[in-house]
Image (cartoon, rainbow, N blue to C red):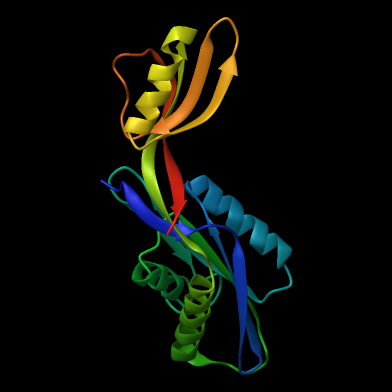
Length: 198
């Protein structure tokens, strides 16, 4: 089960020139396959004039990684898989990379393409801030005010964090935690990726 992983803190890009072909790599954290697909679409749309927009993603689920890649018209195995393999070697997850190539007039050959896509991906990873994510439970707990301190203490004891306290006739505390309490009534329970700098 994937409970801890490394990813990038925010979107980043880098560019290399290989025999006049410009390779621009865009990287971003994507916690779901849907977010990865949206990132691919967004970068590809912004780079409609590129000769190719090749990509790969690795998104953690409960038991494994969902991975996919595309050569986007480059020779089979020369772009998408090298991007994906570089992400695997970097031990990153919940990540998506799109590499936009503007052809410079000189054919690079299969080996040249593999090297170029691998290298620009390596550089964009190395220039990004890396964070560690943990799989936590996000929840809301509604209690009387005399129990508010116990709820806050629960989040502290379980390596969690209080995100918000809403005040009404009763208090509603929203937070993240490694466990689900049995002494309080829990609402809106979901598993989320929660990050900290590393």
